[in-house]
Image (cartoon, rainbow, N blue to C red; front, side):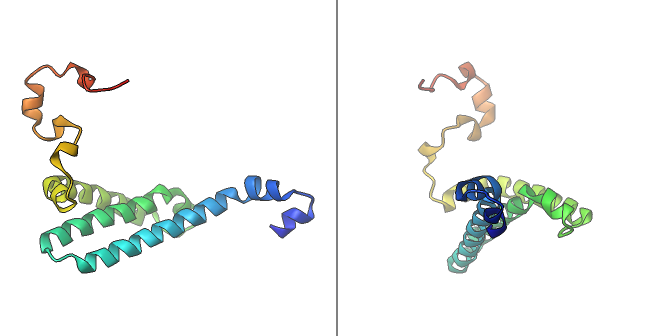
Length: 142
């Protein structure tokens, strides 16, 4: 930053035009680190083995998603090779399918009230599609 100031760039230009992306990336990485550390801490306090396994799956999906979001950067800089990148994507797909099969347990473990779920389709899609749903816009408030 000092080099940019020396060549005549104002503090605004340096912070908002030159290093803003770097600062935001650093803040995102720090926030994700804190979130992952909190997830690990949370898992040490979970008593139910079923809930612990499910939440571990959810937290792994979150962590993998953070890496996949910037996968191009990691590949270009040699931090991850192509084989590992493909394995990471496949692992995430597997974990998402695993979490999806346990969605009811997940919602129960998070104490999500059933009436808080907006999508009636998620409960019983056969029943939902057996009658007209009017494009699901009948509840929308414009």
